[in-house]
Length: 245
Image (cartoon, rainbow, N blue to C red; front, top):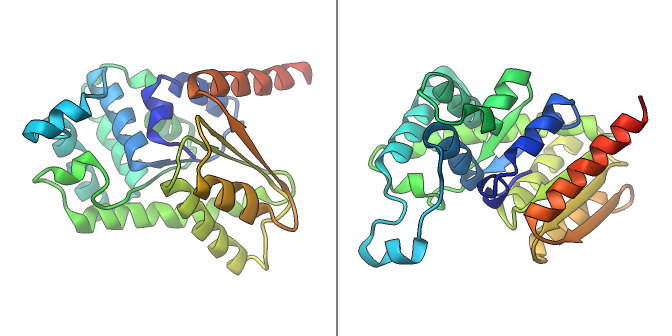
């Protein structure tokens, strides 16, 4: 589960490598992560001076990002696609600056579910005139169901990582887990969760680390900068894989 800063700080190649190795079997991201992924793939850059942009109302008003992503959602609603799938299809049809750095595109290439979980009004693309609340809700809700459908595979040994999402992904995960357990006789159980972030937050600790593993499994908190902790984690996983060969 990804927050925006994981993509914004350039860590996508590490995630894509783990996806290539089939270590990662599902990517869930908040709307911010999807925006950064889309902008890096299409335009080669992402980020802006929020404080300065707020003064004159220019913050988040990029025409290309807002129109391109919202058009993808509208096409997704029409065709029955999830939000992640809609964005990947749109990127595949666009001229790209750094397509190899896109988590969305890598997931599509590898057949790995990549779901995007929007909070209506919380992302810059919702300011755009092309924003369609019905399309945003339809495609993101479809992805919520897909996330819930992936969770039974956690039974007895799966791992859930929350990388840098302080609110959205911990909340979405808890509800998706409830659905999975409701439909599967109380399972999944016996899995491990870990929250990596620069500082401690209530929802990751309670929803991801504590509540989801109570009675079975184990939860961990690791605090540090994403640019340090995620490469160390990826290095440790790859080293373990190589030692088994």
